Amino acid sequence: MRPVRSFHARMASFTFAILLPLGGCTGSVVHGRVGGDKLPPLTAGFWTSDDQTPDRFYVGLTAMDVPDACTSTVGYTQAYLDADAEYTTDHDGAAFEAAMNEAEERYWPEDYWTVMLGVVASDPSGVAGNYAFDDGAWLNITHVTAHRDWTGYYQDLPAAELPVEAFTANTTGKLEVTSFEEGGGMTARGDAELVDEAGEDAGSVTWKLSGDWCEGGQ
Image (tube, rainbow, N blue to C red; front, side):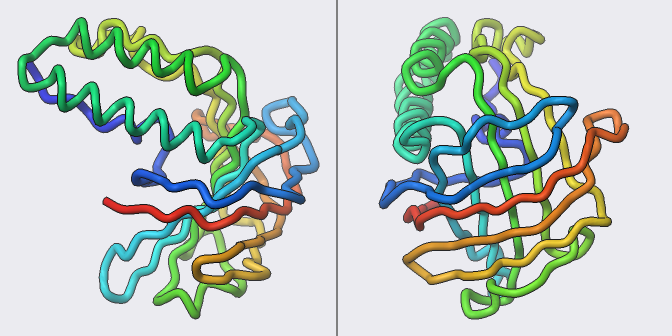
């Protein structure tokens, strides 16, 4: 039986740890069309950080149209860890998949949007400032269109993949982290030309994101 993959693939290229919610998000908005759609109001947000190396400080800022999104992320992450600890040692794939299907319905709606911004700085004091999308920053927008069905996860069946439409900023946009307080809040703004998973044009957006700190740990 193959080892369990990390659930973090569902969050695109971002690395999220167990998060402790400390607040919500106000003022996050995306103007424009993404794959032909307008985003709904973004009602919650948070940021996390990770010291990847001594001179690389990663910060991820996420806004979603899911109320209490940070709390949902905490619960979903813990559900994965609990199921992994309880069922993987005994190779009980069916029990693991059932537990995760239950967690999927408990913590996430069937349809939601996520806007994920990542920047890499040398240290926390250098996070605020301007970035280029081809140099230490990226923007992903995903539209989850159904609950993930974990059935078949251990057999690597297509049904176990997350039903998602993914869009990424190309290298022509602009990004400014307008404020960053370690242990506090973060805001950013910019514009971006988007491409879909096939690399085709998927629209253009201007955006402002904000969120409160969520303590994380590996």
